[in-house]
Image 1 (cartoon, one colour):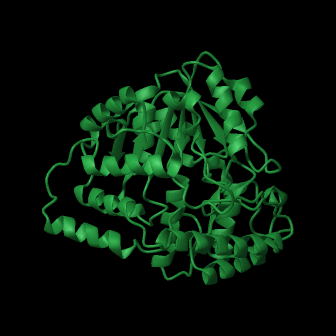
Image 2 (spheres, one colour):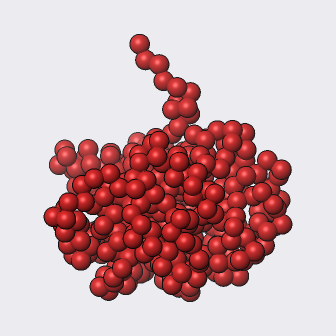
Image 3 (cartoon, helix red, strand yellow):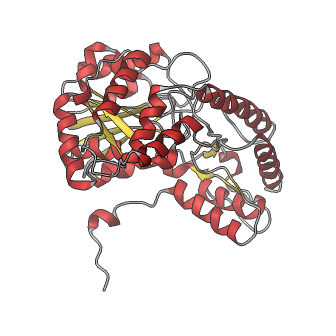
Length: 397
């Protein structure tokens, strides 16, 4: 007899991981699927980082590490925050976790009581919503528009903050849209937060190193809200280390201690070898970070040029990360004679079946008129994928 908790029944399956799994299953059957679903750089981890991990094994880093992370790694993160972001986080304000996703749930569980409101800016990353639900919080969604580059306006934010608001989750550059807020736009939101005591903001900056235009601006760099910002980052995207599972936070001491306490009961300190690899990543730069960014920029330009040629698609060119989020609502209600497209999820299944291209529907991101396309793969595969997408969409009448 099955008996699942209401907690687990309330959670959705991650749509990005589900689509990636479908792609793998089709590939295993010999079907030539091009997957543009996962947010994962296709580059290998740089050699100097891998060498550090091998050395860590030889140096017997095989014991339980400290719950919040090795002190030298937290010192390196503190230095990174200071030198790259202009933020002063001491090592005791930093907790290292098993990826940015782990960092986020640690903070949400430490801050949010059942019934308290958490503001999400749609389109939002898929796991924000379900992590809030897991904590017993109430997601409050602010919808944005393609015309405004999917960016929230300060007056929109101010309007939805209530006495029950505990947290806002902010992400720039954005997954899933690739859009990045300017200094002026970020500051306009910071000034709204300043007006509302007791409201905290998570600034998810995992894509900061994949920015094609302008400067990355940390929300915590505005000193009048510094003590109410939790900065979340990690090594997954900028260093091609998704599988190493290292994320981290910079937070007020009291909250860092709470996250340390929580993590001590869930995972304890995260993988010792991965931590030594992360230390090497943050201590050196062999130029690979810049080369990867340049490759993503080239791929963005290829994909956006080709997508703009498809009649019915609407898009804005993203400024960062490695995603583009076109509006596909013009295809809703259309059919190829076999399949009728009612929504974006129907369209993603249609593209998987008819074009053998995997993308993710926008519903999971709070953007039901859109699909998310990841261009973190080779130029050749991207060109072929968009060619297939175009061919399948042209059959819809």
